[in-house]
Amino acid sequence: MDLDAFVRALPKAELHLHIEGSLEPEMMFELACRNGVALPWDSVEATRAAYAFSDLQSFLDLYYAGAAALIQERDFFDLAMAYFERAHADGVVHAELFFDPQTHTARGIAFETVLDGLERACGEAQARWGISSRLILCFLRHLSEEDGLATLQQALPHLARIHGVGLDSSEKGHPPSKFLRLFARCRELGLHIVAHAGEEGPPAYIVEALDLLGVERIDHGVRAAEDAALMARLAREQVALTVCPLSNVKLCVFQRLEQHNLKQLLDAGLKVTINSDDPAYFGGYIAQNYVDTARALGLSRVELKRIARNSLEASFVPEALRQPWF
Ligand code: ADE
Ligand code: ZN
Image (cartoon, rainbow, N blue to C red; front, side, top):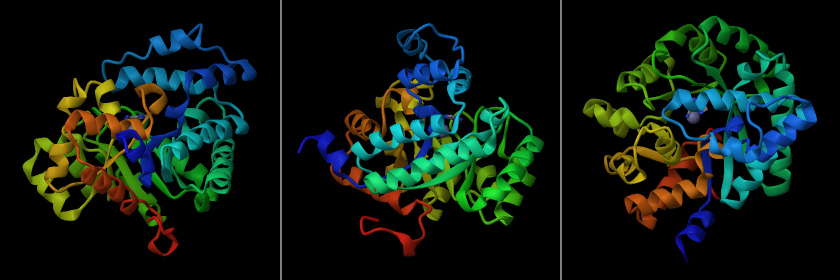
């Protein structure tokens, strides 16, 4: 079996996927047209051509501009369905989707519009492809904690539909400690907790995410490799890292995929998973991330199986509800 077929046949969970980051330029233009929204680019080709990033912020500027095409409930539904169709083709049996409500509520879109569309797609993906899913609300860390608390307030009537919370957007200068009260409140509410840390920010942000926010998984976490004590702790506590190799190269965290430290993390005993982050912007969905990383780093099929198994084990599906492939 060739590598591509092997990877697609592996049952796997996607644990780090920003649904707004799966907005392909074709759909962006379709939605902008049906909603009468002006985009900063003239064409699909010009949009793709603009996807040359120097760091996280240069990507986020475009990502937030593209998200402006999303207005109606059915836009969020269509967006998520397009993602689930690709995920199914890639062998994803379970997906935990990040969504950024503040990106939309700041433009006057109701919180419910976003959630209703995404949740309807989750139900349809289960019915059509048997994919289970969870929704994780991410707070934007470049905004204030008060803004995050106001967003949590909007989410309160819908907590049965939201399984966890995360922290994303511009990392540098916005440490986890900025959101201490917000995440304490989320923990009291029984929500699962994750946070982006150690993508561009220092290893100390990973320690803060663990100790101050109480995260159950670290999103990215690749800069943990700079701190031996932290590496030992992550291995000992088996904290899952949701690593996104193609994203890291596109955002210049590593210059080339061959230089990525994923194998180093794996060899050190960390619970590494592979995910796509913002696939429409970074040149590949989850299977592409597995295949390209395996080729660049010489990962064996046993290692790829381990990574896929890690993803299922690190998911937020309770043991009792796990399907036979878990
Ligand atoms: N939002 C979408 N993608 C992100 C990433 N890779 N890091 C931080 N915030 C994000
Ligand atoms: Zn991310």
